Image 1 (cartoon, rainbow, N blue to C red):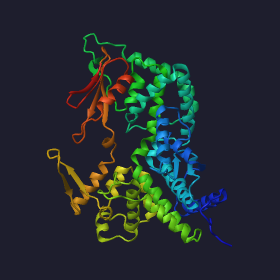
Image 2: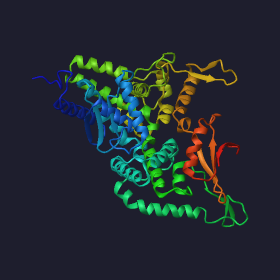
Image 3: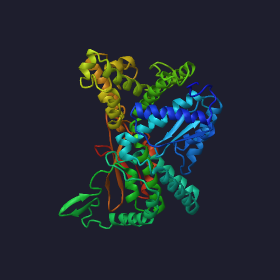
Image 4: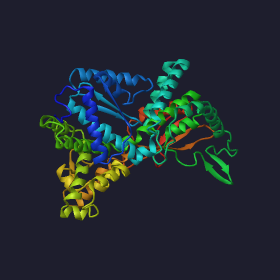
Length: 495
């Protein structure tokens, strides 16, 4: 009797069940993974595009931008200009895995190994996801959010809700406290607290402006004999500050700010762990599919199909290739994790010099510990080896602004260069590299003018400031708002 899990490219649900059981055995019993329960849903290409445009979630509130993206993705796919992902996986409990009905049986096996066990384990065990997300509550919270937005559209008009969400979405990257753990999501508690929260928030706004100093120093308040401004400390979470203290916005607008802010918190860990998450999922599917082949559970033909799929996912174009768009997170993460395996088992003299602590270590235990306790930035800063730097042909380019016609290659492959490349690549994955640091630093208690300070890193200028200002102004209301630099010079303002 044949031990093969499948015999041809056309799958059945019995095939999916056998594949899942075999992958689960390897993932849990051989690789030591710890996963949420899995829920696998087979969907069409149209449903996959719809999942794209609702940020991969099974349910989401309505907004025009989702429909616009759906049309764009559908047109591009139908014209053959782009393909679709083989799967989408959701950080929830149970972990929801969408797999395409058009996938071959081998592809279904790959994506089950990749998503249902690789991503799933990462979601459950990485410290950022543990601290920032609530896998058991996210779907219920999305149901609450969808219902609340629909109620607002009925009460206040779809156009009003739509334009308010436009501004919330435009600033959602500034709706995160990077160093403060958010509260857990719960639909029932959200409903119970909604009215209480509306009343409390309005009282907070009233309290903010209750005292206007008699000496006309409008941004200060006498407290224990000392002059104290508001806010007492700079506030980087702009959506939180507007939700709590915008003078004239309605309770429903505050609640929508809160919803968008909560979703920004939910997606924050994904922004900080793309390389690790995709690298670990790729390593997991690589290990599982190889074990299936070693056990005689898949044919040589199916294994060759897997290798072709795996290679296409990990393809990294050279810097001068027309298709180059930056570092492929799958390729970088996979290469680094495979290198950890190599250094644990067969370290070279160079490895012993750079990573003496891991020679002879259990590679799987070390990898599981690494993906549990790092973000992309710290992962690269600690584990990017000279071997991987050479393999991926990494180098550093300096753009001298005084000479716009030339770039300089500033780092070569020597000890100093390896260290420099490691830190420069890690810096690219810092949150501040992609999201400028904006903080509310002052509210004038007399005029209610709001001042936001931009803190520049590496002399970066704040781009798209003209597009940002109308959204900031809308969320703050009818009072003045301005953005200043670290020296206090006004970069832009709206009265």
